[in-house]
Image (tube, rainbow over all chains, first blue to last red; front, side):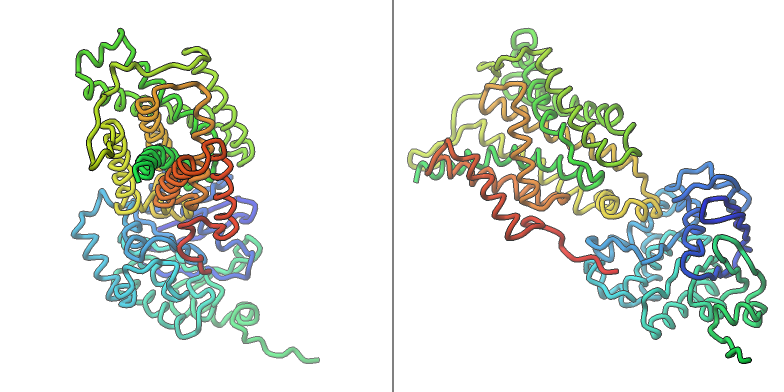
Length: 238
Length: 304
């Protein structure tokens, strides 16, 4: 579905593919280039060479603000909710890119569906987004991404800075979105265990290069992945 | 009592001008993080355009459309003219230097300011010009006792406040307005929502100067005399109002402007006209010490 091949400074010859309807995880340490990769895909950063394609269509000919209308939603690292706007205004803006494709009723229906995924957003919908807790802000960021009915969701570190119980809840919803709505998901995570538990396929990104890639089940058994990302390294003795 | 009411209406009038100009400052600052130094000169240019329309063919507009009709034509003409003028300024003076950073942008804004005010001087001469008396409505409304308010003041306050309310509604209550505010908060994330930054820039650079032009025409109608340097003083006061209210937000600019106008007029009426500017800036300093983010500063702290 999407092929990215980049040559930005932070990324050197990265090539990855997201089959339609799959969850693909990109794992890597801080500074490996994960966020850069997502910014390249959603057009916030331009690439020196290579291309990003969505269902065969080269995205470089579109200005970045057109991508939302093409079915791509990018949920940025650190949530980036609009703090001085209300929860509802944040959600409505998520549909800005598709306001000519979907009518008000369809957007309202999607909003209701998001409220069933995250009921807390409904109770807090008049509140300013900046007054929400970190977990609620993450829920709002995901809801804001989903309201445009994306074909592909780019998720940047949804577990960042959240308590384990909230991470559980967020991942439960991500799984649900994937299973029920057949949205393709590109998930960038430091929490490798969680990410691999819902992904079909994984890529390991190290200093701007893909070093390993394979089905999620295989990666979980890979010695290097285990040692570096799953925290399961055996003590080296002798 | 009479003096108090008179100074209050004077304050409301000039406060409306400050508020309109302040809204333009605030909008451009919110989205671009640029103090648009040329904004005061948009006010002057608007005033001169209104003047040019009213003196055209020795009062042709007034003779054809009547005294109130002439004012409407002058206002609409000046606002449309400045809306376009703002877009041209953005295209010529700002867009080429966006990528160079904020400091070159500020220098470019100062350059645009000098260019516009000197252009006005070149066209209309450096002397005072006066709005023609035949184009200014006379008469006043008796409020009570012997307190009058002139019709022109009444209309000034009415139209200025009406337009402020309209802009407030657009920016604070509509989806488009939330897109403007979102762009001001975080341009990259707004782009991810599908908001075109260019559209927002066009909005702030046409509506802001148009509001300044409205204030300019009304300043001419109320005080008659206009001069090419007057944008400096109004611009500085309006900028003060912007800071008082909290820069980057529309309600703050409105409240800051009107409050500043009233305080200034009261001080002028009851204490000293000569010291009113000192008073205004002392107020600014006090507010900055007590509430550095302005009267209506940031509503919430951003959580990470």
